[in-house]
Image (cartoon, rainbow, N blue to C red; front, side, top):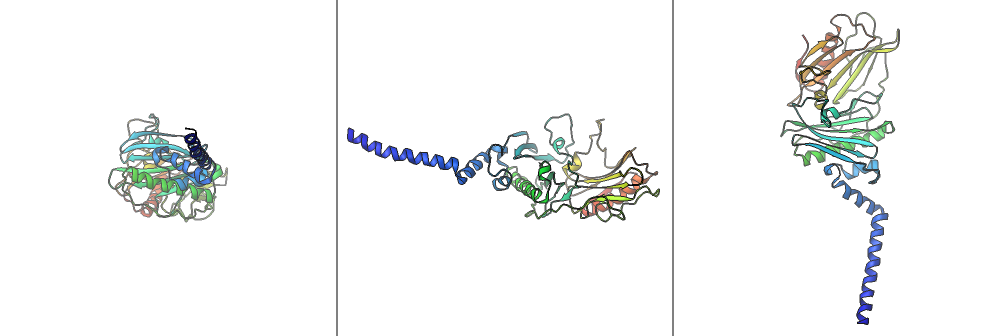
Length: 342
């Protein structure tokens, strides 16, 4: 019996030491840290977050690298929101006929953020339908097998507001979109590797516009003497430009915007008396005018012009300027059936 005990001790002790060493290696080594991180991602945010692209922000940290997630909806109207380091991701399927409802908590269109950067939005490139203003980045896949769009947005703070960090975030967004498309059965063409995204010189400039405001006429009252635009608008999901003056207060006078896919849907109103939003395919009110166009089978794109409190546009100017802006933006994106306010 004593011999058996000695044998059992000789067998058990190395096994205990081996297990302790293995546990220490799992807890302390870089490989063990990566394995723990990947194990957490398997259930975090429904498994939609890619390991390598997210680790570029988290350095494989679970806490505080993956601070929390939540989910909602179902089928063609579902979403996940989760943190990756100090950024926040929204992954959502949004039906083409959805309209923004500000009274519903967790409604995906209401969760799409307005730009929070001083930079105008630019295309992310690489064949993706996407844009970034170096704080908020959005990618959209148009599902060909269901009437819905898959959208991934990443919201960051000013610490990421540079070309290198923005490229990392764009790669996280595109890789997440690919995983979500596979998990949620959204057949859609994908882009390729996101190229470098240099910050464009979008500061006010005199003379004729050549980028996102190209071709837009200025009022005949000599009130406009500068424009602010992206010089290479590409095919971003959100495009903007501004006309302004320096004679009195150095203020912006007119803002032009083009929005596509879910970013156009979030600007619309259902026409049920809800405040805000653009009604119908085209129209005007006291300080704005809007038009729309068909861009494939998805939601109609929306083109807008708004004057500011410093502008006194001559009669008919908003319609004339909108036509010039909308025609060029629609052509650039391959949109048809442009409807303008009468």
